[in-house]
Length: 555
Image (cartoon, rainbow, N blue to C red; front, side, top):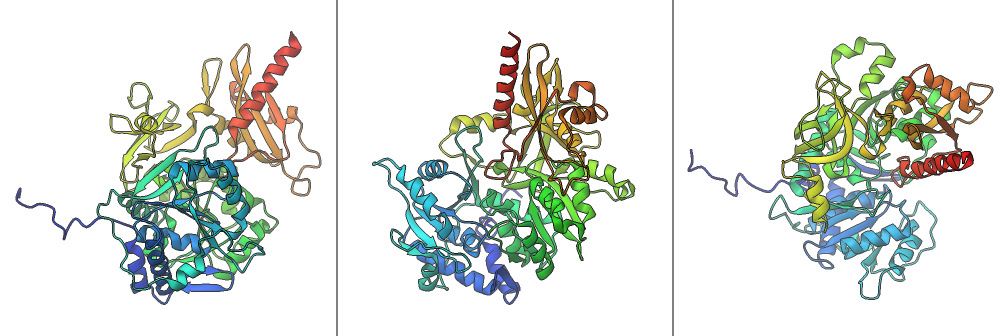
């Protein structure tokens, strides 16, 4: 059989862009996008994307980076197809970032063109004002929106998004990748502790991740998908492309609002949505959350380990929660808590505890393991031996843009991608994250998982948010310090808010003594980064300062 070799007929480059062509053929008359009173079909979406791609082709060259700064509106969805259709590389930028970070991203990516939502105009102007004299800023395209109030004019903009649609060619022959390893997207990590890193993914990786997501979640044809997950966050975990593959209806939402979300679920018959655990917490803490859903809504959560009590509350409302794990570097969810029928017979609290585990690799991943970070040897599968989570598979990034040192550090010569996350492997082969490596607390020689302590804190009915970090201690080295935000009095079943002593006693009754927080700090709200994750680095600095002040007072 040695004479049989790859040919153009059997080695056409894999790309998720072809999903749109098929959607226009199979689901042409079905709704693709709904935003307020605007509805497009899949046939219309294909034509709009081709028009934008043809307009882009006259502005940029193949391989150029095209950035987008916009919330979940139709334009950002269409650009997930239109930009690579023009042979360019898509870079979606978080609208919640500050102007300095946006400026850094635009310069580092060497973005040639930037699509700007009308409400992000000031942010972009500030970001571009930071460009040095010898750096060329990107050309600007304005995205207007009749559903919001904006006084921004086209002055300073090359054109508007609507005009690119109007003057584009609906019969444009889009630029197929010459090689499936060609870059398709450039995504920047959150950058909470250092400068954001540019993660590059290829057509092949995004193709695999997009279909992988459908399989792990058992998404049927023609789902109704509510965009509660920002498309600028790791390309919405690849669901813009996934929804085209199954002819889904995309319900676009400019801003997350729990009351509006419940209204959209009922109005459009939403079947699927995604979000970080903070979204689950908001949905289950909303005034509307006492009304169970008329029909089940599947919700995929990832981004950080969800506390079991939050899962229990969310599922009691009629949401069917699936839990996964992934990183910007893996293009989406690559580990899921694949559910076993025998677990249905367990009590609700036990089901939530199991579901809080990250689970097993998805079909598209080759291997996942938990290893000693120094030796690379697998840790014991006992559910308690800590190690670094490593993986290899088709949707792992190509690497970090312009950063070969960090790329080689995370993608080592032994063939694994080192995630920086600390976890355990259970005897049944299911993975559970215990912390980021920097968030592990070492107290008296014991490795202490902040996530485990937080999970107990979330069972307290008075607590809305919780985060646990290390606080320096002269005797133990480090001790747990808990930061908590309490529920408002009208949401709190207790007549009196708990004190620091109450919280410590609550934990002592449920945790080994070495894991019990020695300090509890109450805050109105915990600090979060631009993707909604609690900023533990800021809390660590606060705890460190408190520890230092305490030592000074004893001197």
